Length: 99
Image 1 (tube, one colour):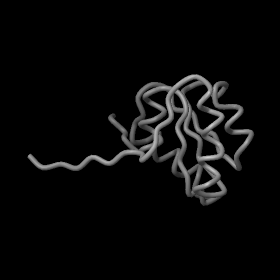
Image 2: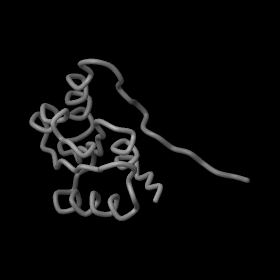
Image 3: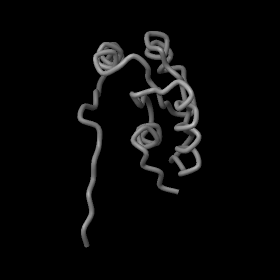
Image 4: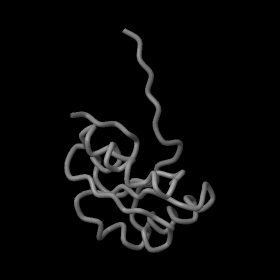
């Protein structure tokens, strides 16, 4: 069997790391799609600091939810995808739909 796996080049973990995320995101572009878990509360500071479209993913992302997130970002041409929260949010940000 052959396969390839690609993931983010930098993932920030730990208390207070959301403060590091906004400067890192701004260094890569002006706008971001911020993918969160079902609750956007933990990402509110990050969303406020960026020209961001928030997009919530409850549980594991489906292909349909990933398509909805992509559609939400397209009108504003967001070059960045940022995930904050659950494993599902991070998978949704990476395009890893498992349903």
